[in-house]
Length: 83
Image (cartoon, rainbow, N blue to C red):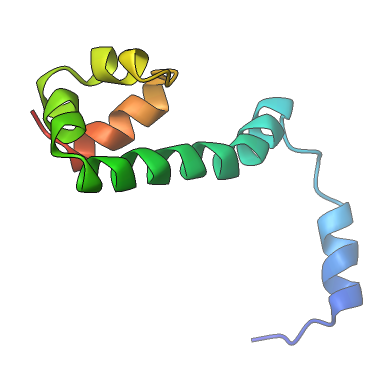
């Protein structure tokens, strides 16, 4: 395996095309979405009524509590709280 210096790696990376703008936006949104997901999961662990509502009707429970039922968020929550 070749050992590359930081400078060499920087040169190589500069030759790559810019990423699509959608990828950049998605990467910027990931930390915010992750915090929202973590908040909902923690709340569901602590609040049985909220957890039961999520399991019964995920999208409605999220909307009722003021969360935006983003498709990626809903999918991640479905994996954690199967109905």
